[in-house]
Length: 314
Ligand SMILES: [Zn+2]
Image 1 (cartoon, protein in one colour):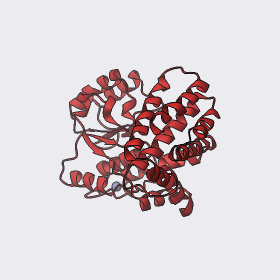
Image 2 (cartoon, rainbow, N blue to C red):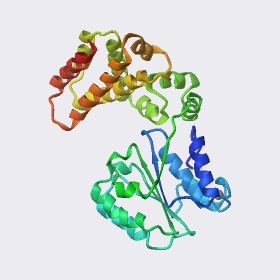
Image 3 (cartoon, rainbow, N blue to C red):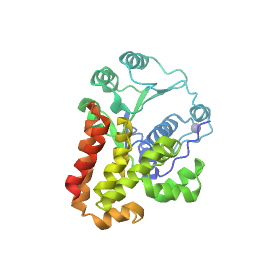
Image 4 (cartoon, rainbow, N blue to C red):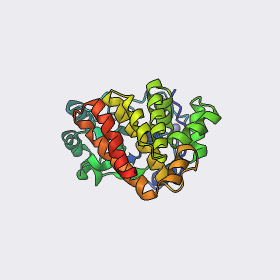
């Protein structure tokens, strides 16, 4: 059975309940927010809300429909993504939408990570969502809507995920088996995103990259170019270097925010670098990350990262 306890989604569920109560639930929703923040879980909760047999205000969690969804066994809740999107897969789903639902009077189709759909995929889908039917509801999730076609965006109601509070994020990690002490420690190091934290701490390689990124962030705070170059030079694998850049981006971005806790490396960054410099570093990291599409030599790239960063720090 899937645990559908939501953490830090009060404002989102309040809004959805209100729409449901008022009979104004849109036929297509788009849940947006960073990976790991709980969009898929909220999409499933939304399916519960829409399909619950007793639902007046919130899903009852015990009717046949709720039970089937919790068991991931509802014939009319369809997760469209599979391994990855294909034109044939989406065509098949669009065809299904012209049929009656299997079980009740509603079918909910969840398009996870819809920003991974190509323009062709989205155009195939467009036909289904531009003709609302009382039998079909669509829920899209994505990190950002930049690659989503305007014709799709204009037909969905977008619900951005709010940032999680520290206690909500701790509770979520504790439920997943992390101790309260460790949960707080990880959040301070990696930010309030439980999915991302779990992904890193369950993968030895990722945690090593995270630690490297933290050492580099400390070197940046200390304006120590030599040790930054040395840390980068430990890596000869492109993927690993881009992994470090991605974690480094998160760390520096947190330091830019006035509400981030004054702890550890965040504190050093805030104390030693101006906001303008920190912001410039995030932009420089974005530029370096954009090179992931090019086949650059890893060793040369590692040295390049360090020197490009210090052009703006020193
Ligand atoms: Zn129910």
